[in-house]
Amino acid sequence: MKPTVPNAPRPNPLPWHERLISNVCRLPAFFIVTAFFASLAVLASLFEKRGYWQHRIAQTWARVGVFISGARVTVVGAEHLSGQPAVYICNHLSYMDTPAIFSSLPFQFRIVARHDLWKIPFIGWWLGRSGQVSVDVSNPRASISSLIGAVRTLKAGMPLFIFPEGGRTQDGKLAKFMNGPAFMAIHAQLPIVPMALIGTHELLPIHTHTIHKVPVTLAIGEQIDTRGMTTKQVNELTTRLEERVAALYDEHSCQKISAAPSAKADSSADVGHLEAVNIARDLQATEEAQRQ
Image (cartoon, rainbow, N blue to C red; front, side, top):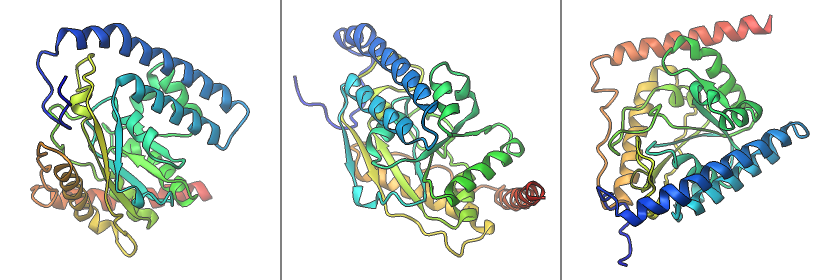
């Protein structure tokens, strides 16, 4: 068999033997280990409150999951993984992105994820018991309390990870980033680290249930310092992140990823700035009310 070209287009349809192996072996095994490790993490949460062992269990689950998929994750730019408090962001291509991230980042962190994931058996139980941050992306106002929790997590010294697109891409291209990660990093005055996953869309794209064994790359860029930035620069920072992630993807891929529509080019840029200011004002008022 010829070696797979990294990030080469996914065959459509997949060869019959790949579909057979995926449906009979890979996916059932992945679901079984997910249920097992999630249950183990929930059990560990009864005895350990720091989240250390739960995170170690999640890392083990991720490595086993990546092994089951047949993929091999290569990390490029690992020198940028300091483990210091920061916001880590990455493009979102597949359900396999989370195992790829957990298996690759060598330090404990918390994830900021869509609130509906908390409804999924086993996964939701682990999310709830391990101190991850839930965000309702459909209602910006409802996410204010989540932003408060995320900023507090950062200020307490725990790194955060988030997919700024808010969900998996439909076609492997880069979707428009939400302002949340930039806002959290600026509000906490902590750096933000851009990363790009290459290959997971070909491994397991959205709306499919068959795994296509391919190499995966996690490319990590230099951190962006937010010290001195204000909420007026949320859109500007979001645009920089979109461009940086797209550049990392293009550098390590044989395909090109289209940069998301620029927040600056959006006719609603002023509205986006006003929204960021309003959220900052609401965030400050909520924090003051909680202190009273």
